[in-house]
Image (cartoon, rainbow, N blue to C red; front, side, top):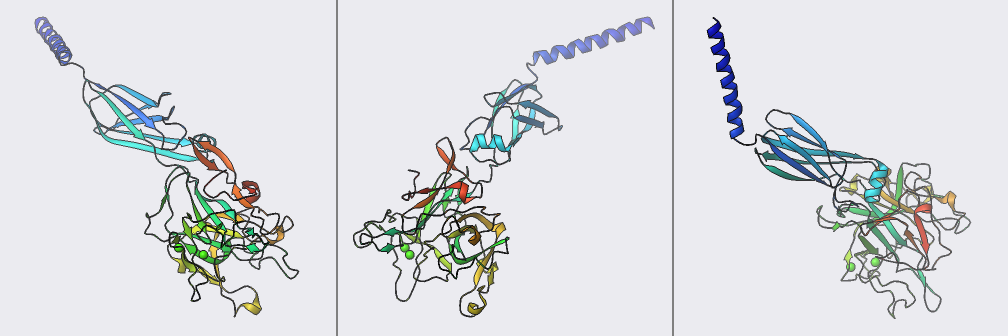
Amino acid sequence: MKFRNLTLYTLAMLAMFALTNCSKDDGPSSGNLSVTVHYPENYADEFAQNVEVKVVNTLNGKESFAQTSSQGIATFLEITPGSYTVSSSVSLSSAETEALTGIAQETQLSGVASNISVMAGEEVAVEIDLNGSPLGSLLFKEVYYTGSKTLSGGNYFSDQFVEIYNNSTEVIYLDNLCIADVYGVSGLINSSNVPTEFQDDQNAVYVNNVWRITGSGTDYPLEPGSSIVIAQDGVNHQLEELNPNSPVDLSEADWETFNVRDDNRDADAPDVANLERLYFTGGFDWLITVFGPGLVIFKLDDFDSLEQVPYPVPEYADILAPRIKVPNEIVIDAFEALKDGNSASFKRVPVALDAGFVYADDTYTAQSFRRKIAATIEGRVVLQDSNNSTEDFEKLDTPTPWSFN
Ligand SMILES: [Ca+2]
Ligand SMILES: [Ca+2]
């Protein structure tokens, strides 16, 4: 019995020795994995530091975690050979997002790399690009509505323009973007003026005219930090025959509002694309009031889904065209200008969309209103957007289309 036990013991020892020895002879039994995590493009930092990276062995489901270094690299040493899924998800606070993008908004980022094969003895490097930027959005960058004086002291209003800016970190497609002016007077222009009859409804904007950028969905990309100018007329207003006193040359405008009429009162600048006229209740052109307009932009596939509301003054309801009700939920940005500082009671845009308003010194002053700069990230200007035109816009003595100077 004793002998047999000894033999079994020896055999077992020999077997263990053989096994250990055997695996040593075959070289390393594990590999290393390093994962570099990148922030989305247009962020202030390229590499995401102190974020968690997870690797999952696709065969047995085993998970491992590591934090990225100051160079954005997470390292996994001596992992079992096999196929892995590598992922990272990051929750940024509003302040963290603001530091990285200029946009104060909580953001969830994530990125994944699948089917990463790690063999024994291998050093594998993987790159992960995080996605999921803050919403940011299209904003009114500048509105020039006051018009200018001619050399002979006359009034010139054909040089109005509206500029729209991509304030996000991603490309935004302008296809189906609508722009509209809000119903209602801008203040006590004459003694019979009253605030808009729609003021009780703070959940929608009621508009007079709607223009749209056509397109199939991806025809008109607008890069982060870029803008478009929509002109009432896409011409050089400083020409001799127009108004040498006008502050703007809009012959390079991105779009213009061309109002097709039998009498050709609105000229079609051949080199400037025309917005689609979806709904129009105006006169010769898309003249936004020189006393101070309310404006909104929104996106819409189906214009007919918007409610048409009878003209709100009973004695004109049968004569004047209905107005269009635009629910607050679809409004991307709003701007409000009123006649003067005493015109607050004439506010047309719901407070939830724009809590304030701007006003010019007078009509035909060539003054323009431009949104303030909140930050500059990697050369990209980020505009201030607190949904309050009083706070967000500054009054300029002369317009600055496509520019901040
Ligand atoms: Ca026009
Ligand atoms: Ca044109």
